[in-house]
Length: 280
Image (cartoon, rainbow, N blue to C red):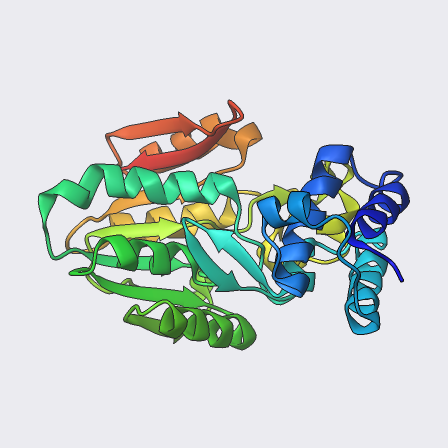
């Protein structure tokens, strides 16, 4: 019989050629909690625990998928975001820590004001942004839009499981003629140029939806132009919060200026990259 200590030793040894050790250990902890119901302290106290054949098979399957560089969030079927547990699959991007910082910025600006805000999220994916905002701004009226029917279905399920009320709309952002009257527009649109692919890891390139990631090299700001156009032409000009391509921060700022936004702030993420912009 294989005990927990041997399982961990084999897991680390087989995945070290693909990932660094800290990442392997983190993935082992996540799988142990999800598949075995063991938390970190349990792993330390139960090294001699013998595992059932069914448990070993599940670990072997997960290990094989990790070797093929499938993201662990897709293997588990969920991701953590802003303290929430959200279902994810290959039809949506895995929520990122940088996007948590975008949500935090909005909350910093509005949490203490006790306003009945109206918000729209353009390109919602898993629903991570509007669901996190709804949990912290329960009085807000929030809409979320995406072109993908599969993404919207998943986002609606995530919203229900996290007890939030959000109106989901299927539409192509680039084909919108007007926006609903809202106080805030938020978006994490596609912004990675195709020629930046060589900088990305295979686990992203081979698994996450390219529709939500990439834009054409010759027009990388296409979504920001549309967002700026829609927001600037609204009867009541909303605040705009967007996640941006760190290599195009200045170009994105200039674009919003051309659409008449006088106040623009760019923030760096926890890695020191210029990844967020607010315009009004």
